Amino acid sequence: MRLFSIRNISIICSTICFLVLSNCAKTGRPEGGPKDEDAPIFVTAKPPYKSLFFKEKEIRIEFDEFVRMKDLNKQLIVSPPLKNPPLISPQGSPSKEIKIKILDTLQENTTYIFNFGNAVVDNNESNVLENFSYVFSTGDYIDSLTTKGSVKEAGTIENKANISLLLYRLDSSYTDSIVYKKKPNYVTKTQDSVNFSFFNLRKGSYKVIALKEEISDYIFNPKMDRIGFLNDTISLPQDSIIETPIVYFYEDQPFEFARGKELTKGKIQFGFTGNRKNFSVSLLSKVPDSFQSVAKYEQGRDSLNYWFTPIDRDSLNFVVQKDDFIDTVTVRLRKKKIDSLLINPSIRRTLHFRDTFFLRSNTPITLIDSIKISILDKDTLNVPFTVIPSLKENKVGIVFEKKPVQKYSIKLLPNALKDIYEVSHDTLNYSLYTQEIEDYGRITLNVNNSQNKNVIVQLLSGRNQTDVIEQRSISGSESLIFDLLEPKKYTVRAIIDDNKNNKWDTGNFLLKRQPEVIIFHPELRDFELRANYFLEEIFTIN
Image (cartoon, rainbow, N blue to C red; front, top):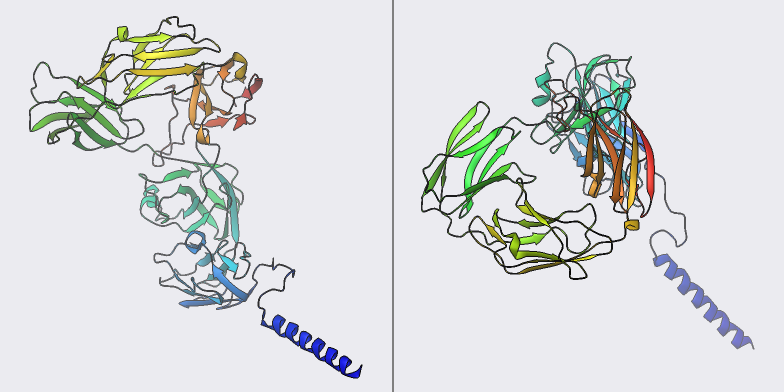
């Protein structure tokens, strides 16, 4: 019995030692322990936070734990902006210390803010030290005034993120052109794509600018950037809250002709930028009587496509005109192959009652033989139709009366359509189906326009709610019905058409012109319309 007891005790001791050693070898947080949810804590800085008479070239900031930088290039904002970005280290490895090396000569008597945004996170759990800033002054005091406001993008229901807000001090050096060539006195960015705040500002009057930039240099590039501004200046400390939202937009660019170039045999493209109104291209070269040409703007691009029947020439000469601009252009002809005719239907299966069936082509259709086109319903009865060519795009519309729960078989025999090169197609067959009337919805808008403004009411849908489904122009109070709508999301907005040109007009910074006002219906923003649902709403235009 004694030997048995000693042996058992020995086994038990060995087991305990093994377990202890095994546990000692494990690293990391014990299983089931609490998760670290605390953000890093700023401990100290050298020079100290809010130092006066600052003259150093290096700053060291210490934290209570290891931190790392996350999206520093996007998060860090230095105000006033520096000509040369500071060097921040380390960025690729964790450290308890951040070093800032200043490469610029700092302005005298100026409060500087290094706003890291949400770039500082702890190394283990990525807990964010929100809106961490380091502030100092090269003078004898720290500026302490603030102002805040909001921005919105013209014509959209969702604002872009990361909008830059600029403040220019109104002193003897200020001119409106300063936004094109000089960095502002203060800069910040939107916190949530809408709201912004400035801190540590000096007393005075300022011009407020909003920029949605392609390159974050705080300089307005009208070819790439959106701009917004207030007509009035702000004065601090009075205007600590900017009540009016700043609307940012793309400016119309001045017309600039690029060039003409041959894309394929029988097709020339004339590129330009800016407003195309009154822009024209005229053939200067003498050509045979059989010569044909068609010119159409390319949808969504600043270019005019010019198709012509192939001709045995090395080049063609054109006159390009736009208001007071006139120039002659020579286009070399070297391509050997014309485009093959491609035809695609706008609808593959379901034909909605608001739809028109289009056949789109890559080259202009110049000949239509309706005799070679037929439409049969599900009872194989002929359906009357009309073929209408588009003047703006390379497409033809086949228009006919649509009935519920019907099948339509559309057939085009060879040579029904011919393009400018006299190229046709093989036999084309399409089958389309309609639905029940109850599969659609209706929106009725009772527009309260008591001031009799010129208003364009638009029904939008599609991705980001930017496709105009239908629009109506009114100059008083009216009831508008949008019927036979597909079940999907819609948005209703109104454009205050001040100049009565039946379109939205953008603004211009130098002309101090704001874009035309766009009002979104408060309830019908990205609204889901169901089938067989009749919605009626009041839309008040103030």
